[in-house]
Length: 212
Image (cartoon, rainbow, N blue to C red):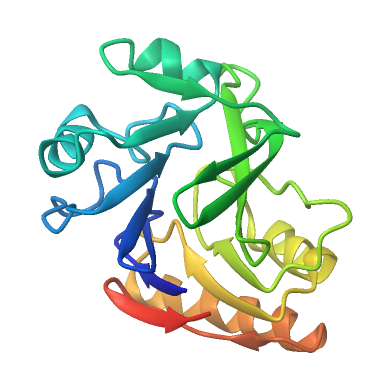
């Protein structure tokens, strides 16, 4: 299974010639190589995690793709056929087994509504919690996508999250709001927390890949 980190929180996972996209949003460059896509997972409705334009680019080359998301995504993307999933669900999409966790977005501020959010575990290895720190109970996470910077987090929470999950591998996501200095700082903290748990950190930049 090949993982390619794209800008911000967008991921491309490939296996057996088929593709899965996760959270291709407004901070991600336009998707182009979308033929062979069997599924798209949208963790929540915020524009930095999905846009109509990105979905249209997938559908143009892969019209039979299944789009998964929580109820909030289905409401926000009402013009699309969204397959609603909730925490505890497991689905099969081509060569990908998707297990869903969580339920709500991390709190940004009490004045800002909390939206639906799902985390996804892909083929019992790659875990991405969307905009949350939900730990997948009972799961030995092989590879963890770690949020590096956002209005809803501080670095101490990121460190605690990595220490709680104890992944074998980790890499940063949700970093487009950070400067180069900010990325370097968060990478160092994520690396340290990962290594404390016996894992290895990979400071993936956009369009860099990792074989899982």
